[in-house]
Length: 354
Image 1 (cartoon, one colour):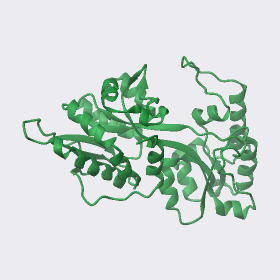
Image 2: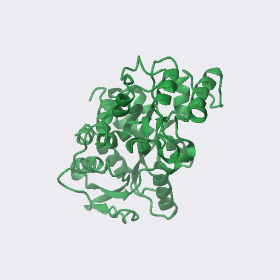
Image 3: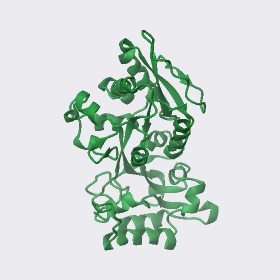
Image 4: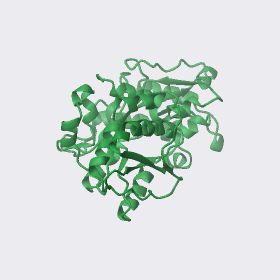
């Protein structure tokens, strides 16, 4: 499998996910992990996967489990799914942490890159450096796959499970009504920040609860840093901000506080920016490829996809690499690693992409 991981993982989020015919053992939504089978001679060892159960992804991940279990059959290992029904990584992590504290730790999981430094610092996941070196040909994948937040001080604590990017979703019907040109999908010809301000203002209308906003997104430090052409953190992790960053923030301040072309943080707490986009209350929304399935289901208007805005019109996007992990409390570390290797196989990535 040569240099295909990123492509397959993006396809996994962009393509419709198909259910497999067979269904692995699964706990009802919200219940704690099942008791694990003892590792006695000749018996199947059950490896509990605490799975984030976002509704639009579940069928795809269950296809992965079914495929992995076929691979593991001859090794007397079976993956059993514990479904944690949430689309929030923070809520997922809180629930898994509660299980660990309660002495009922799952064996494996999949977790957001943003949480990897936390679980590593708290010794909640198993280091995989030597196992990966012995069993995984990392040269067959894009170099950056193993250079994410799961790699700390030269030690690797996870296998990359998915790579996701920010893109600009836009409402074509609103652009047509305003007689505006669609934003470009060419990353070398994206909206400049100045153009974003102008277009967002032109697409905004109404007052109060009926307000339509031109744009939502890009108020986080990741995108601001990329749009400014520099990271907000230096190599020694100290916080750095200069005039280029201030320039980006000045554009966002214009949209948020002067033109009122962006919803306020209070408003997006009540209804998220992408939810507002889906309901027709926001014309453009910078959001991740993980929301593509939801965007595909919109029928009230036609959705377009464009490159993320940037100061100079050379769009850029943050990449997020989620990780498969082995939880430190597992009673079956060897079998858990075999399960992770099966999940990480080409067969399982193909099952997810299909």
